[in-house]
Image 1 (cartoon, rainbow over the protein chains, first blue to last red):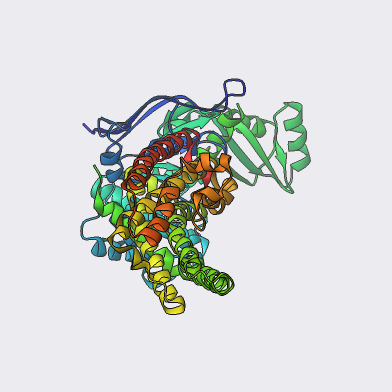
Image 2 (cartoon, one colour; image 1 turned 135 degrees about the horizontal axis):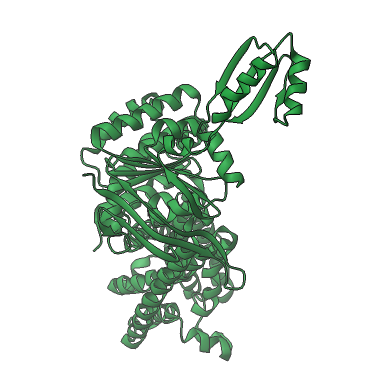
Length: 307
Length: 261
């Protein structure tokens, strides 16, 4: 059985005075197992970054408990922080320092064994070898993100917290980074807590997803389970000859649809697709092409956030 | 327990920063040159006018040893500000660095830089005005240590406000030391101050040191009471200032260090 690397119980963060109190994170609980990738999904302002900052110890929780490796974070901070690391697209590194100097300083702070060797390996993995003498402020946004990720993997972390790890990366590099993350997970059983706005990334990488909105957990489960919880799909019909007839047919039956030049996009419960197609046939409406778009995590996300 | 590998890592970070930043180098060398030239020449003029050869010694003593207080305070605050300007605070506190290790790195690195500035100023004033900082004999050691601690006290009080309120109050990093300066009486005897100011000076450890320095110049010795009072006040203030800094850091962490980025 896999061990829980991280356990969060009733975590709450309130800001402001009692008169104008704002609850950024509201009584959330979740756990993360060894070698698991957990996605933290939510719109801007949902409380994701505040949660990550509490998990890193740079923001104190108002209530609740954080346990890493079975130990209370508050009482074992130094020991725990040696075993975890983080990367965020929204945080900078010393701007005048070169890539190699930054990694050397953080390697020393984390007391990384065989520091130079480790740095060299990661520089190659994140394609930063040729940039190692360049200063941080001379790097492009994507290169900065890769450096932040390199820093995050320096100390062979058992758990890594990633806030939007592939934002500002071009597609090719983002794919490489995702491959690296999955490789680390498989080789070293590294656990990853990931926030991302890229739903296909979350769907591809995460074993489980926790959805938060207004500081509260509103749903959690595997990406497949969450997607299955929405039964609506989109049927796209290409109709050339009977276009007007089809439009009238859909209007008569009060079926919502979007109309393009020769096609209709019809959002529909999955179970009703067969019935719609049968009715079209009975009404002698011929369609030239049909495609059914199954819901994905983005559809799920939009649906639960709008609720 | 303090882990000196991490203290060294931070000291290395601030040393490297020095090589990247000409402002920091100017702080170390340019301003001492300006001060010594300006006040050394002023002192030379006053010597001519007053026929009192001690004037230049008193003025240069004030200038050179005030550098210790100023730099000791400034080093703490500028290194903290560097983390705020570089938006690096979360990176270092998400690492296993403890607050005491950070404080230790400020003190160690700051002391080394302060000593470099002091030695540089001493050499310069010797070359330009034949003023020898070693006229105080071995007394120079406790005198400098006491002034260093006064600087740390000011530095940690300012740092407490910086860590709590961030860059919007950064002006106090430059101003704070100079609020204490008049009451420390670096260039003039304490009794020059009005009564109300003398009362404040009574609580300022540096005032005993500068008064003691003048005492050494004129009598060749210093009253132990001055040294003891200065050290006693300094130790109390240092503990209180570090406590205040830790308290403000914890308050800041409650609000989230991320907001300072």
